[in-house]
Image 1 (cartoon, rainbow, N blue to C red):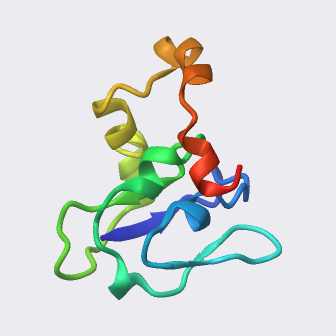
Image 2: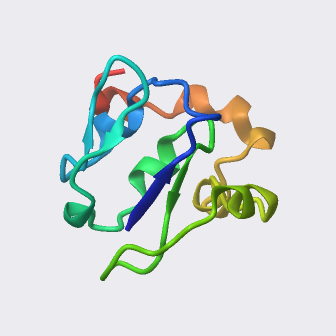
Length: 106
C-alpha cells in the first residue's frame, strides 16, 4: 500500500497521479496527496515510474504501515522497486526505446 510521498524529493511532476490505476492520488498546485490510500492495490506503478524515488509502497497491502521517511532514505528503500526491476541510472540510455510513457499522457 502506498505509504508516503517524500516532500523533499517530489518535484510535483504528477506521474504517480497519472499511472495509478485506482486514482489514489489527487493533483494539487504542488505535491500530489495520497487521497484514497485504502484504494491502493499495491501494484507499485507509482513507485516504479517516479523519477525522483520519492514514493514508498509497502508490500503489506491489507493496512497502512507506520513509516519513518528518514529511515527509508537511510536504508535506500525509496525507489527500491524500480531498481529491483532493472530501471536504474546505469541503463538510463535505454529509456528512449521505452514508449510506455505514452500510455500515461507524458
